[in-house]
Image 1 (cartoon, rainbow, N blue to C red):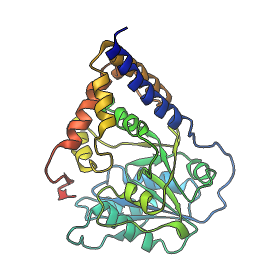
Image 2: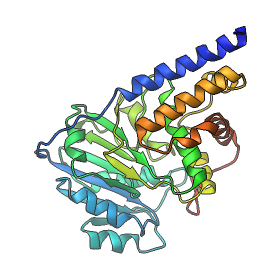
Image 3: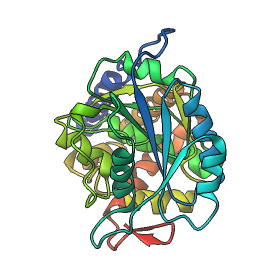
Length: 307
């Protein structure tokens, strides 16, 4: 075996160790009832197709209330949420320099009052009935979960799982997944409305988060197509800026040994996460596209509004 192959395998082994460490952070299983006082907060903008299912799934977990923050929607998001059983509040006008989701989360937290826990959930998420009891069993003041990302197209099945794997390869650092984030009210530092990547900023302000892997805890319908995904990933490029580790990871794929090892790693991680395994054969190309997307200059927009 040539020296470059050994180097490629060494880099891949580092990636395997990082993902193996993350895979061990499983959400506990519990059949206990929810005894805590929890209010769920759902920021929503033009989510009439999904917000109803989100609200109904949250109400089935034992929360006291679901507060949906209608963030300037141009469709029937507010009406659908109210019909599903949520308390709907309107997000305040967005101030210059503020990001929509972070500001909506902050408004929702204020509208929720003073429960023991705040549970921030995206409007495109559907949680399992035992989701809340399992998150509470983690016993952390700030916990976020990584569920199953729906991949309705071939392009999404190829790209989206690699996003989660790229996060798992990073060194331990304050990080959180805003799709499903539970925080004690007395430990909640408040969302910073100037931050586009509001979940990472919240984890840093709180001094860290406990992140757990839980494919069966919730499902999230992030995007409908690959172009939608690329626009969304451009929006969140500040969460995981490319660095030398990503450069080494991509360089390793240039050798046959490194490429084969990375495909095996991706296939194994996909199997554990419950997503299609076959697209792993092109996983290194997805990693390269993710890096290019995060490097692309220009102001990102989402749902017709700059972020």
